[in-house]
Length: 98
Image (cartoon, rainbow, N blue to C red; front, side, top):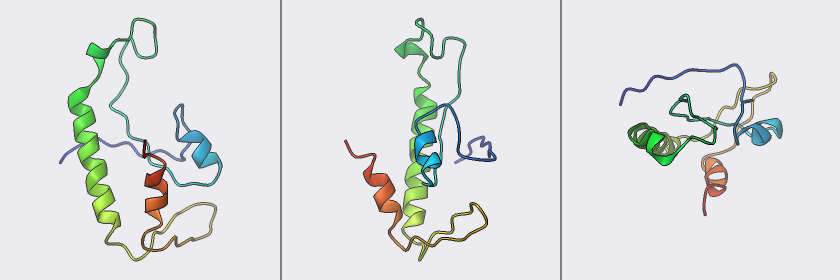
């Protein structure tokens, strides 16, 4: 799967991940991109990048599967190293459950 990716310097941004990052929770932010009507009253369902959303969902699924093979998770941050253990990421995914 080929997707254009942009790495940022930190996890702050104009979306839902910001309070988690501010609380010290590692974050990944996936976004299909903005368009001229984004966040305006004229924004509508037909402007949703559904194919991009599917590609990102597939990538997230691959990342989740890959994480299950890890014995621990290295989280770069303020100069310290934390290992959350083999299945710690499941706690993060649980927040996404409806």
